[in-house]
Amino acid sequence: MIVAPSGAGKSSLVNALLLEDPALKLSLSTTTRAPRLGEVDGKDYRFVTKEGFLAERDQGRFLEYAEVHGNFYGTSRAWIEAQMKTGRDVILEIDWQGAQQIRQIIPEVQWIFIFPPSFEALEERLRKRGQDDEATIQKRLAAAHLELGYAHEADFIVVNDDFEQALLDLRHIVAASRLRSGSSMARNPALLRRLGV
Ligand code: 5GP
Image 1 (spheres, helix red, strand yellow):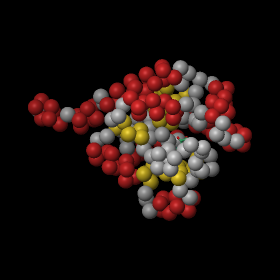
Image 2 (tube, rainbow, N blue to C red; image 1 turned 90 degrees about the horizontal axis):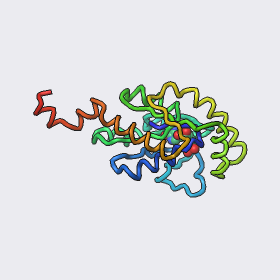
Image 3 (spheres, protein in one colour; image 1 turned 180 degrees about the horizontal axis):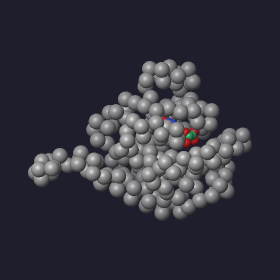
Image 4 (cartoon, protein in one colour; image 1 turned 90 degrees about the vertical axis):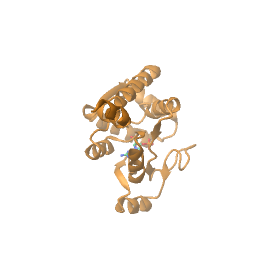
């Protein structure tokens, strides 16, 4: 799980990571937020109405969901369960509320928190992006203060001051996660048999 305040540069880092590591899959979230310019339904998010979202929620279709900045966001239960069956490495780009829920359901999950180098940098990135109006930017900055308060619950902290360094840190975390005993053993059943483990 990758969690960060809006403007911390999370999506650029995740996109770079996905490009170089085809074994990683990004979970496609469902949201009631309106698409931003250039966002594509089915690629960036599944965009649905609030009524549609609530109906899916009531049918238990989300493994987790949360209201973030006034919109609903949720992770598909069926998709995650299918990935887990095949043993695929999955990235969830979600908020701290979703991360807390997932941790209850999948205790072995790794939670990575991305820090911006400063609040000034965060504000600058939100403005440069040019995708949100002033009220939205202020809402996101206020939410960032709250979100940062949950960083101590994460397993890893990556500071996105220098992009290349942050990407390198993420690569190391993914590599270390794959070497955790549970994941490693699940990938090597034949070796375990030969070693009598
Ligand atoms: P944005 O609207 O900027 O794309 O995302 C706003 C926030 O919602 C970000 O913190 C993002 O990580 C979070 N988010 C995106 N998808 C999900 C999801 O499926 N579940 C939860 N809980 N949060 C999500």
